Amino acid sequence: MPPKLKKLIKSDEIDVALQRLASEIVRDYRGKNPLLIGILKGSFIFLADLVRRLDVPLEVDFVRLSSYGSGTESSGKIKILGRLNQPVEGRHVIVVEDIIDTGLTTAYFLRYVKRHKPASAALCALTEKPSRRRVDVKIAYLGFTVPDKFIVGYGIDWNEKYRNLPDICYIE
Image 1: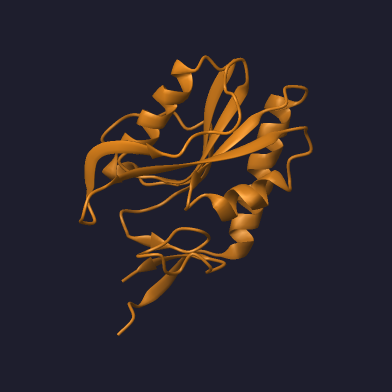
Image 2: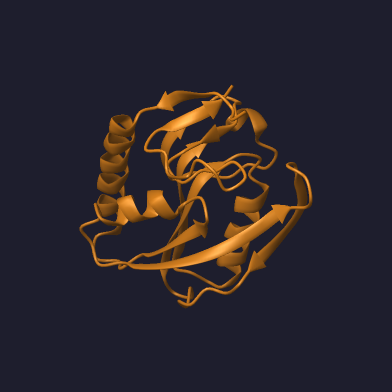
């Protein structure tokens, strides 16, 4: 039997947040040709919708990170799967995430980016779940703060399911 889903954030609310985030990024990065790095797989829908609203020259790259062992809890050991195709040094980098949960994976990747000497590095997240935070990460551009519930939709999955939902829902 499939889990019961309840809407948490409707697609029209996501659209409003996307426009707000895009306006903030355009204000801060006009004339800087930022490199947006999407963390796969969860950020791909958010990043695609965001870049279509950014009226500045930009480049996009992707990276896959792994922090889960055989279970559903983070192992705490983070691996970068694959490599970035765009150089980071001297660039204004915006890391784009679907959700900041414990902060462990995001903090690890931000340290990795900073070791490659960008001109600047900022974090843009669709959602954050501060109740589960274990490592402090500074989110420069945030869509929504969500309660401690397992969320899916708009790119966020559960066992590779529900990414295609237009809304963000939680599993009851």
